[in-house]
Length: 359
Ligand SMILES: [Fe+2]
Image 1 (cartoon, rainbow, N blue to C red):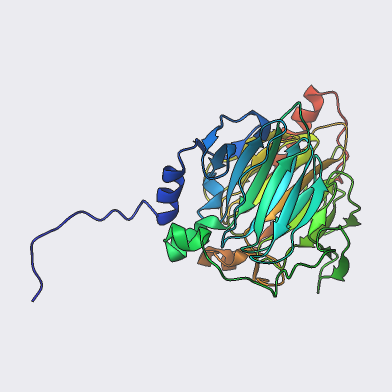
Image 2: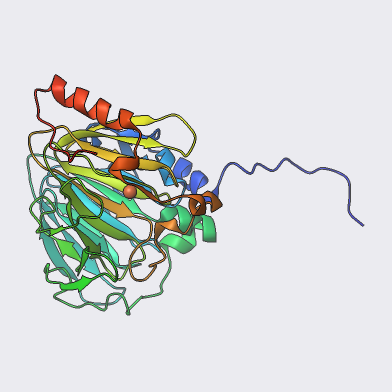
């Protein structure tokens, strides 16, 4: 027989991941975008041994999160391992990372500004600042929200002895930047399987016509992860076609200047101004469109919830039913004419020429 005495109130709004973030005691930044990842309020982060902040933008929807971490001059962070995947992009400075499996040999590789690498699942790792006179700053995208919410025992995530040898078994060439090139069925995109990209800013790209804007890109498979990454670049005087997918694609501007527009199927547009060091995450199923207003090609790197061959179903996985009612890409001739009017007026203000095909 059920007792009718109420013993407490349940809140469906605070997740295990939220409680973990609160317990870490560092600032959290939200909203739709971060204008400058290097200019965020950070706090001392006991677990890491540096300064840091969480970034939980609206478009992440607790699929991925980001954090920024600062390593003081001549300092290192504390060693750690964890059961969530992590992609790291270096914002400022140079240094090194040591990686090892529990009881296995240690290996160390060096990185610099704009390097990208992935931490093999549950491998021990420690980051060092290689400069004695200035801090290092990096941003990491992880799938910690999914993992914390699934297991909701923080100790299990950070103190688990399982070694995923199928992902990383101490291979001494793991972080040397070598890789294998793949084509993707039905697409002109190419995929590079590697664990370390020395400089995202100069990495070679392949022409991709489908999304317009004179676009070039390359996808990455890293550390046998379910998370994925890609670099995309588009031309001066151009903007890309609008498209949409699920949440958790963290877009970090590597170089350039411009803005993106994001909107739900029926709702207000959000305009995101960006330049090198900006971050934004299009919310799930919101259309988004990228506009270059700078004098150089605009290049970004996207660190994504899924999309690797280990989770090829892509970030459409969390799509709503409404996706089936319409296309996930809007061709230029089908777009709201106000899109081009706004772009032309923004370019005129800067004295820049528009180089888009006529409708
Ligand atoms: Fe996108």
